Amino acid sequence: MKLAPIALFTYNRPWHTRQTVEALHRNELASESDLYIFSDAAKDGDGKEAVAEVRRYIHEINGFNSVTLIERESNLGLANSIISGVTEVLERYGRIIVIEDDLMTSTYFLRFMNDGLNAYKDDDRVINIHAYTLPLNEDVPETFFLRGGGCWGWATWKRGWDLFDPDGASLLEALKRKGLMKRFDLKGGYAYTKMLRAQVNGRIDSWAIRWHASAFLKDKLSLYPGRSLVSNIGLDNSGTHCGDAVYFQTHVDDTRVRVGGIDVCENQHMLSCYERYYKLVNKKVRTSRIKRGISKIIGFGSKTGN
Image (tube, rainbow, N blue to C red):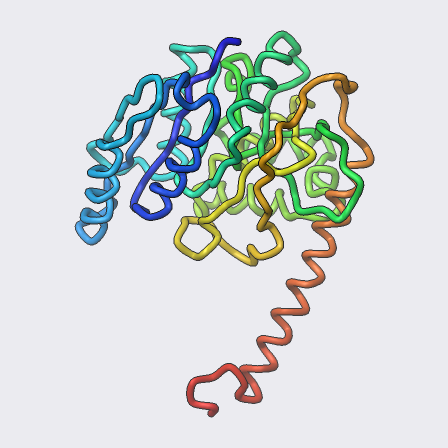
């Protein structure tokens, strides 16, 4: 089986980086895989020591077929770091597995990603292999397809990344023109359009929303496992983008997920499951924020009680 190189993107979180690498090292295909580590530079002087600590650690990493370090001399930022790094690796290898420095992976993560890349390498309908699945209380198949791209442990081919449009304004305009905003937002379940607009306006630095929108507009599919093979340990306010994250925490499944044997089309049952889950989360988040607001008004949760 042809193995894809792994691109790991790091910045200033040494503990998270170590956990991510140690979990990745436990993967059954780790010793046969080439690892590329992209280390972004600090934005300012206050962040230099944390970046330096990450770099000291990544210089010690072994146990992979090869380890290549790319240490940026200036700060690229989250989005530009990933966009440029993914492009560099794909130009050389034609396929890639991507993780950031806050993902705990199953020992079968690399197996699933490579199985997916090999199974659908010649199927232009599939643009992305995604290792994360929502913690659904539903009947879920072994694997399934949804429209769009993914970002928490993912893989693609050069033919897929060639469809990536970095122009968020152009993507937003296309969604409006084609009347796809409601569908893009999972019928009100998730505010993807709002996120894309925030990227366009410079309020967030997100490559992922543009990757998802690019794939969605081209009517391309992502393969998902029925059991999540990653867990995000960066939902602790240490990362760039965090929020009401408790609803997206998952148990990392440590069994192999079998790839293939399904229709290459969006799974309408799973689409409905995702829509329902996000709507339920929205309801819980709104209720929680109202309660926190009431608590502040009447003094609960305040250090002073005033």
